[in-house]
Every structure is written in structure tokens, then in C-alpha cells.
Image (cartoon, rainbow over the protein chains, first blue to last red):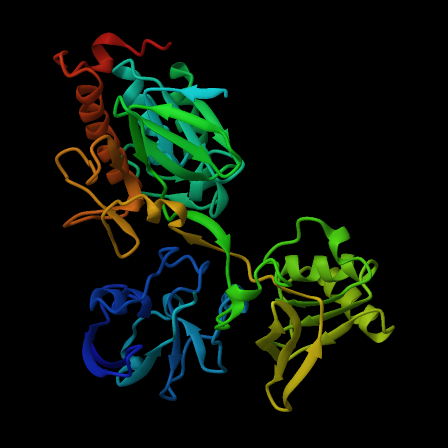
Length: 107
Length: 336
């Protein structure tokens, strides 16, 4: 497939459906940054900072949370049952039509 | 007043700041580094010392900690000074256009050039998003425990699920009148033996563990009087307390540098790519803390920026001298 659609709801509630390549080794954090969404990704994707905190709004099957992701989310705020770190979710063809929302800023 | 004087005062002892010492040393300029962390190395030493870096030219792979060790060794001939564990707080420009910088602990530094190599900024406690939280800072809210005696025979609510929250809960359970630990989940990320101790002490009534809950509101008039604890299912409960300690780890912040009248965009300092100078003549910004069109936050780009920056710094300190690039291969490294 190569290109999938991902719908992103930003912090203002605006919704956009965007093309995302699945052959560039990107994760959701990097995808959001590439479209200039205000996601910081401070640690660069090392699962250390929680500044790529997002909510998953569609019912796609995602990679299981590893222990470290749960730990980092412990230090985040506005955490919900559908919270994930964007940097821990690689873009793959099965994520076509995924819907995500960017969580409020941590501080 | 004792004053530390140098040619280039570097804020931030990460890889970029350390390499500045070497490049400045080749031009016979002395450097002094200030860092809020207690040891040199910045993010490399603090956050990911064991992580390999693959894009340092000439090193197919090098651990971040090893890179810092090498940079310190490379800088050593130029005898850099260090003020560690102190945060650069205020600057003022003196009559001769040099700068006086004072840290949060009152150490005074003076230099004609300031190079900000502050990376992500200073690591500061993460503050929960409760709207009136700043009203109670130091009036019942502490983001870190400095003097445990303060809590003797007092009521304390602690929030968090990491080691720091667990350790202080266990420690204060022996001192305080009452300790309540509030955590968002059922599981804890801290050490297993600490978790077991918390569970045991909770069962024995020595402390109170409240899981699946968050502190959502702070109440009081002048001083904290109570907190509202919201359970995911059962809803709100107000709890009287003398202190609330939110222990949610550290997050990098630009800190006092934000108040130095530098041009800042998205938490980064704007620079001119000719020499990485800021809008204040004599102050430069290099590495992850600066921004310009095409900026890449890479260590190797920071090294390049440091090298060009010291040339400009030299010309500012010695406007009458002409500078010629000398090669280390020809001249070697002549330390101080």
C-alpha cells in the first residue's frame, strides 16, 4: 500500500485526514511532527518524556504497550485508558484510517 | 565578592558546551562551564548514558556516556572551570560590555562572551495541571522533599507512582502524623520491594494508599487546607492536609534564560547562522537550544556551531587581531 490515511484532531479540536507513508520507518510522533502538529517529542522517540502523548479514538489493533511506555505515562497528566505515546507506534498498513487526538500539553 | 572570570562562559556542560572548550582553547581562549546538573555531560550523561549514538563522524557507534568521557578528555588540556549543580539565573551587562552572571546559589561569574549551550533547558519538577497550584507553592505544596523534618507530625498527601513517590511515602510514614499516597493506576512502576512495603504498611494502617485516583483540586485560603481526590469510579472526596507533594519527575524547561530578553521561538533561541550570535551582541547560542531555518537537533551540528561561534567570539574579544585558521595536524594541541 505505501500510503495510509490518518485522522488527527489537534488541541483546538480541528480534524484533518492526512496521508502517511508506511515505508519510511516513521512512528506516530514523527508523523505528527512532519505535519507541524505541536507535538514536542523532546526525547526524540526514546520513550522517556511523554511529550508525544496522544489518544487513540479508533479501534485499531496497536502494538502492546511495553513496560517503559506505561512507566512514562505514569509521569504524564490527562492520561486516559486510550492514552499512548506516539513514538511507540510505528506506521504500518493496518493503521489505515486510524483516528488520533493530541493530548493537552503536559505543563 | 569572589568572582570567577573567564573568556567564554558556557551555560550547559553537555557535548556541545564541552567541545566549545576545545575549539576555544585552540584560539587560546579560556572557558568556564555552568550546569544545573551535578555532573558534566548534559542529556548524554543524565538521560541516556548507555544508549549508542551512530552519527558521530568517525565513530560507527559510541555510547553517550563514552562520548562525554572523550569530550572531557579532549577539553582537559585547556583546563576548563566548572560550576556544577547551579542554575544560571541572572545576567547583567557591565560598563565594559562584558557580562556578569549569577547562579541560583549566588556564584558570580564575569566574561566578555556568553555561550548558551543549554540543550533542552534545566530539568525542573513536572507540575500537575491544577489551575491554582502556583498559589500554594511553598504554602503547602512542595515539588521535592528538601527537609523531611518539615513534615513531622503533619498530614501529607503524596501523588505519583515512581520511585521518588514510593520512597518518600515510606520515609514520611515514620515521621508524619498521616501519609496518603495517591496514584492514578493500580500498578506501580517503582521497585518491587518498595511497592510491597507500601502495600504492607497500608494493610497495617501506617499509611493510606489510594489507587485509581488523582488529586484534582486544591483548597485553602492563603495556605493549603485540603485536596480533592477524584476516584475513577467513586468520584470526588475532599481530604484535609497540611502538605501536598506531587512527585511526577522532572521535565526540561528553558528556565531563567527565557527572561534574558533574547529572541525566542518555540522554546529555542533565535540565532544568526553566520556565527550563532543572538540578538544580544556577545551572547551566542549553540546546540539543541538554538533555532534557525534548517536547524537539526544533532550533536554533530552542535559541534559545527561551536566551532564557528568561537571564531566570532575571538574577534569580539580581540577586534584588533587577525585570526588565521590553524590545523591541529600541523600545530598539535597546545594546552594551557
